[in-house]
Length: 389
Ligand SMILES: Cc1cc2nc3c(=O)[nH]c(=O)nc-3n(C[C@H](O)[C@H](O)[C@H](O)COP(=O)(O)O)c2cc1C
Image 1 (spheres, rainbow, N blue to C red):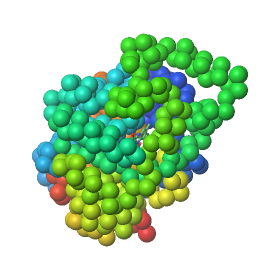
Image 2 (image 1 turned 30 degrees about the vertical axis):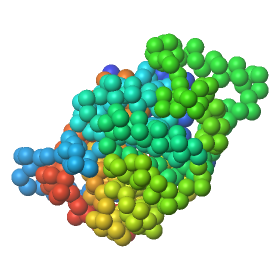
Image 3 (image 1 turned 135 degrees about the horizontal axis):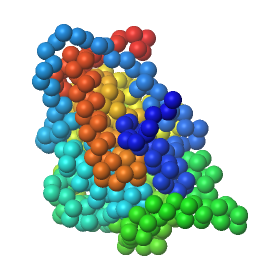
Image 4 (image 1 turned 180 degrees about the horizontal axis):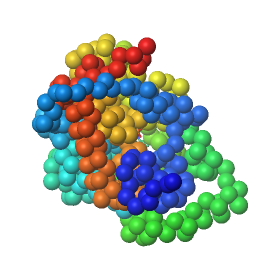
C-alpha cells in the first residue's frame, strides 16, 4: 500500500516532487550524470554498501552535531554545494538558499554560473557565504570577480578544478540541449514550459531576470543551457596548472579550497600549492564517468594524507546517515548538491529548511546509535569493518 504522500520525508521524496514540477530538460539537467552514469550511481551505491556498527548502552543523552570549518562554528558538518543555474529551478533560488543555509547555520556556496549574482545574494545574507570559481581565460575578469566577492564579504573561495573540459551528459543531448533538434523536436521541447505551470509562473514570470548574475557583462545573451555550454567551451581555461594557484593567491587572500580532487597525488599537490582545504569530488558523476565514487576516494585519500588539510567531500550524500559515514571515512564535512536543489525546486526555501532539519535529526539518531556524542568521536571504529573486505 503506498502511503498518503502528504509530507516529503526523504531526499528522494523531494526529488520526486521536483520531477513533477520542473520541465523535463531542467529536471534532467540536475538529475543526470556523464555518459553511462556509472560514477553517478556508484556515488550513491557505495554509501549504501558502507555499514555502520550499532553500539548500545552508552550515555547518549547529550549529542552535538556541531563542527568548525575555516573558523566558522556550524550546526553540522555540511555545506550547500555550488549549483550552476539554480535560479532556473526555483524563483531566485540562490537568494532562497542562502537564507535557508543561514537559518540552519551551515555555509552556502554560490556558483560562478549562478543566476543571482554576488551582490543580490549578499543583499539577502546576514553573514559571509562561500564563492565558487571557475578559471576563465580572461584573468582580468576573474580578478574583478574575486574583488566583487571580497567586497560583499566572502571569506572562503572554492576553486573548482575538474572542469578543464566538459563531460557530455546523454540526457541533455537527448533533450536537445546540445542542439540538433528537428522542427518537431523544437515544438516538443517548447511544450514542456506551458505544461509545467507552477514552475512557469514561479521562475518564468516571477523569477526574472534570467541571466548569469556574475557574468552579465561577459555573457549578456546566454539564455539557454545550450548557450551556456558553448560559452563554457570557449571561456573556461583548460591550460590551468598548479602554477596558477600562485596567481590566484596573489589576488585572493581568504581561505582557498580546491574542489574536484579524486587522487592522492592531486591532494598532495593541492596542499603543496597552499590550499586551506580540498573537496574530494567527481562533480556529482557529471564529468569523467568511470572514476571511483567520492566516498571510496575519501577513504583512500584520508588514509594517505591524514590530517594534512581540511577534507570536504561531495557526491551521493542523501541523508544524515551518509554524513556520519563520510565523517567516519575521514571527511571533516560534506557538500550536498542535488539534494538541496531538488528540495528548492520542489518547495522553495521551506523545502530546503525542512531537508536540512531532517539531515540534522538523522545525524543525531545515527550518532546516538553508534555511541558517539560529538563529531570528534566519529571515526572508522563506528564502521562495520566487513563492509569493504
Ligand atoms: C545541476 C548541477 C549544477 C552544478 N553546478 C556546479 C557549479 O556551478 N560549480 C561547481 O563547482 N560544481 C557544480 N556542480 C557539482 C556540485 O557542486 C557537487 O559537486 C555535486 O552536485 C555533488 O554531488 P551530489 O549532487 O550527489 O550531492 C553541479 C552539480 C549539479 C547537479
